[in-house]
Image 1 (tube, rainbow, N blue to C red):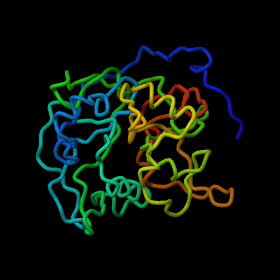
Image 2: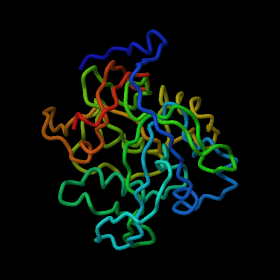
Image 3: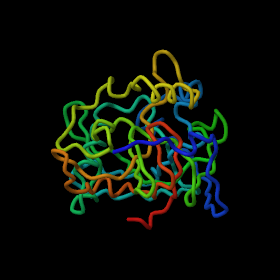
Image 4: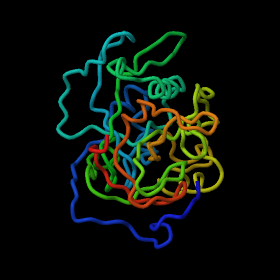
Length: 284
């Protein structure tokens, strides 16, 4: 494939449209404080690591279950949320088993098992992750995981056109776009096609930004960089929706990627460049 830089990158401008659909969303506190057991003090001292920030991809985690049996259907608990309950990152304390379980879920999910929870291993046994992820939109401002840091409600663009940061793979005008987690990058080849078979297990090295644009953006965009952490990681990004490719030939689309299609590329670009997208779930 040939590559070209994005219009946003070349001109330093952002796409704007009159048709916008915006909703207020609240950053979920419990996934950090209870599920990942992050102390309140750390969430306030390192507030940007867990915050929702402008232009980030926003995911819904309002569907939470109390079911612990890994073979039981994922039945959301009866919890009411005045605003959509969201995150943009899994933070820095999510166990490696959880990250590997998320990778495996989206690699293997299909129409027969999508009602099951995300399964991971911890302490030598299988466990059910209490949350499911769904796409909401693109953040328009900052909101914090802890209300001790500031407002935990922020605006999110859920429909319309937006300029957002591209992920690890080049994308082209007219392609469908999906979201993915940054630690899933080795699930795809350099063009963004799915690699058949399971990649190496998630480990600490996989989460360190690679040198170049990825490292530059993650160190500077989110105000969370320290020498010991490599910047804000385990975040949701966008990529082109592309099939599994074997021996240079396209095979089939993965159901776990299809579930995450969120719109279409309006103006494409290279990895880690701002690109223009149209948010709509009517493409799938």
